[in-house]
Amino acid sequence: MTSPAADDAYLRLRNLIYSGELMPNERLVEADLAERLQVGRAVVRTALLRLGQDGVVILTPHRGARVRVVTDAEAVEILQARAVLEALTAREAARRATAKEIAAIRRILAGMSRKLSEGDLLSYSDGNAALHAAIIAAARHETAARLITGLRAQLVRFQFRTILVPGRATHSFAEHTAIVEAIASRDEEAAERAMRVHLGQVESTLSHTTRRPLGES
Amino acid sequence: MTSPAADDAYLRLRNLIYSGELMPNERLVEADLAERLQVGRAVVRTALLRLGQDGVVILTPHRGARVRVVTDAEAVEILQARAVLEALTAREAARRATAKEIAAIRRILAGMSRKLSEGDLLSYSDGNAALHAAIIAAARHETAARLITGLRAQLVRFQFRTILVPGRATHSFAEHTAIVEAIASRDEEAAERAMRVHLGQVESTLSHTTRRPLGES
DNA sequence: GTGCACAAGATTGTGAGCAATCCGTTCCCT
DNA sequence: AGGGAACGGATTGCTCACAATCTTGTGCAC
Image (cartoon, rainbow over all chains, first blue to last red):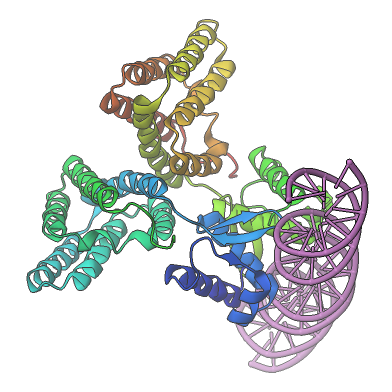
């Protein structure tokens, strides 16, 4: 099932949505996408089905697919769910990370510190993503990892917001430091708590700055 | 997308797996299923794709679908993820439940008490499911609800285990009572904690009694 | 007897075409 | 003018047929 070609089409279509080339609420006509991606309509169909289960597009019987519009309220929900799951991975990481993994995590954090002092918020944001990914990898929790990936996919259009809020980056770095220290010292409770605090901050930053999602007129 | 007929086939196929008529690791041949369900192969294909994203079946390119075997370790993972998500719904329920919903939840708990004293563990188990469903409904958290449903789907073949462990039912009832009281008194922290304790107990009961999944030889 | 190449059968993946359904428009009746 | 039924275009959902791929069984060399 899902040949490499079909997989590729699925990924490309997803990227079109993530990159904003296909706007939220835009109607996704199978024939158009088939031509755009240079694949058959059947391939587009399976890709759309998968994206539907991912929550990235909305499927309506006999009416096709639309890029899902994530409202502010839904974004908060998604972040909340992601928070408790990432907190779980932080806890597991504190329990199971190898010394090598902890060293790698520390290295990422150090890199973020550097970027922050240089004022390079974009690179800082990359480090942010890398750090979370490293923690998830260290947790070795497939289930949580899969769910988090799915949730993040639904939030792509919001992700650039929070770092750019004045003063946010500094706080963010402190929160990340707390998480890393807790993991390094094998304190499961603290790691989970620190991750929840962190994502709770992201959530409140988001809901204070965002009043309407990006793609809406 | 996904006409009612296709939806129906998806549900029926899922039930075949849940009920154990299709055993874990069993190969799912599209043509056979099409005849069995009296639908076209295309419908079976979309159903399999959806089940694949649900984590109920495993899809391999050019080799078709198999019923996923959930190992003990994976079951624990799934329960952990479910625990933090249901804890989130308990918290939200404590915050948002209407008086009517709290009354309904209390009624379900009272019914469970009755069944327990009658020794009717099967009905007690039904009440258990109803209680969790009521709490999730009261939380009004679509995202968490969806994820929990997906996780539960992967655990069906384990769900009968824990209630039958001697003495487990009594403890279970106490845990449920704590959850309900916390929600009723609007104590978000306590509600979340109580739910996590409860599902943590389920997890440890499971890992102490189960050494191999049901469907393995 | 063992291992490997190869062919035959089985099964999935995809393309083309058709029926079913939905949406927008027009036409008709009041 | 307004409301609603009916028509036409557009799009999805599905069937059928075929190509691509995997699996199994056979024969051959060693």
